[in-house]
Length: 274
Image (cartoon, rainbow, N blue to C red; front, side, top):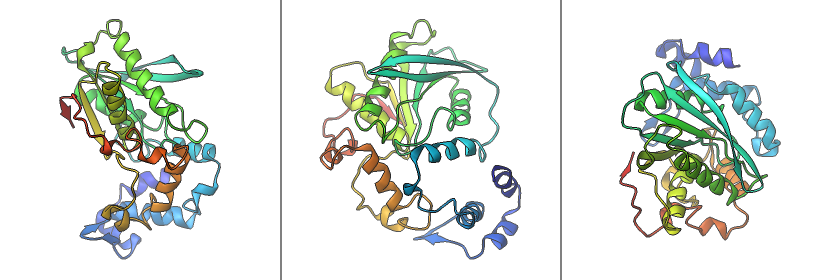
């Protein structure tokens, strides 16, 4: 399947459109023919069946195998793996050093997406290499513990501890502890801004910046985008709700601003949002 997906992206758009069939749209937006074809193939191979009925570990393994299939090959990037202590366990962190490191001493702590339930350092390995080389910074990718085995607030606390660990060891990493940012995609974006809120509430040092890539900042599913993409786009409303149900302990958690950070009313001191 991974080889087939790679081949699909080598085909011209006109052929992809012919193979994919009638264009799928939502509002004024039209899906890429390549993505549409891939979703169609997944459907025919039963991979898009109700994955909420599958063991989370099986979903994680599939995601890991597909990691990097659709991504551009990254520049050469040095990596080093670390393990840090967290409450009742340990978690991995991977340090990325770009080929050309700028002299600012800046760094980024990166939190992967995956609905708090899937995803790993491996699934975002290529992305973190690209980020390190694009920014000229060291990047630290965090393998926080996942739901449903580890529900809220465990993933948040792991990510907060990871940021603290990078900050505490800034000198040994040859980075400037005043220029450490935090970021992530989807659930990782949620965790990034929630770490900032947590540290703000507890009077601790904040990340310099937040890099938020389509972050999930509200557990309310009543938005227009949720209605537009409720069905037929792989990450559908049912799957989104499944992620949330696995992450939170009860419906009360859904109203917590650490789960829905858009509800936090106090301005954060992080000086920039990307």
